[in-house]
Amino acid sequence: MASLRDIRTRINSVRNTQQVTRAMKMVAAAKLRRAQERIFRARPYAFKISEIISHLKAFVDPSTHPLFAPREDRSSALLVIVTGDRGLAGAFNSNIIKVAEQTIRERYVDVHAAGRLRLLCIGRKGHEYFQKRGYELVGDYRNIVEKIDSAGVSRIVGRIVDGYEAREWDEVFVVYNEFKNTISQNRILEPFLPIPSEQFVTPVMERDVEHHAEAKKGVAVDYLFEPEAAGILGTMVPRYLNFQLYRMMLESNAAEQGARMVAMDNATSNADELMRDLKLKYNRARQDAITKELIEITSGADALAGA
Image 1 (cartoon, rainbow, N blue to C red):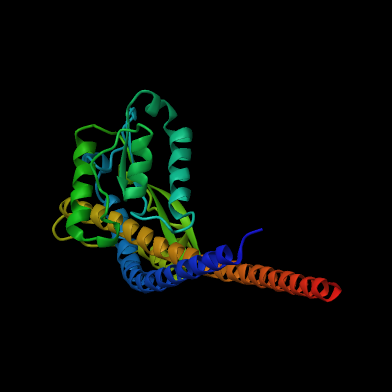
Image 2 (cartoon, rainbow, N blue to C red; image 1 turned 120 degrees about the vertical axis):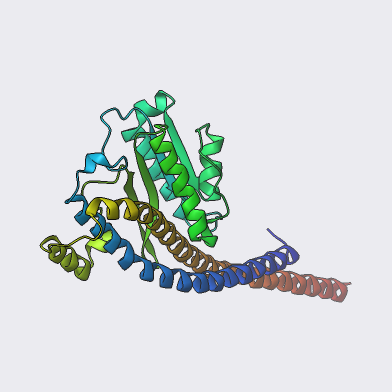
């Protein structure tokens, strides 16, 4: 049985850990609030620019643009995996890694066996996980998830597009967590290159009635383009790709902060329960020690009286 001193030490240790988890929960909540504001502002623009691209493609031959025409020979691929830079976020990182591994097994098993699969990991957790397992990684994009800016996103997209045009990979997919609400995320596998022929809609966008109404209304609208549609399309495509990856990273960051806040809240609650159990154990041990001392005193007094 543990001594009173050992139990007191454990109680103090759990209390200190609880203070840390409570502070981390508060920090995650503040970051989540800012991340939510950013993603709520970004989603309408991302959806609208995707809709515009879809309309423009109807007025030009997609095969004339190198980023639209699908390739018959898809013998190589790039998988972009967006994770966090830090842990302590429950199953946030492990879930997206599982989706990436499942995608490799189901979609790219032959490409991977032929050594033609590349991974571009945004976030330290994904980078280190796949690096240890011998996958060929493109670039090093660790410690940038919480410092998302347009310049950093442009560099990543530039590397992806350059590799696609140089035929280092024939298609590009992105795996990321979409922010659904504070306690849950949608794990998304989204096509990136070639740009899909139909507008890709995530579950969150799909449930948005306003987005659906705008999309349906937009199909029937006849646009006049100045300059010609092809010229506008050439200008819009880089902006579209940059903003789509920017949105995915914002989605992942918001989902990560929500997952961390929930994980730290659970850890704080578990610490409360553990401390209650330890205090009960401490009181029982203390009562046993007092009872033992009383028995020893009584026994000694009886022995002296009998002498």
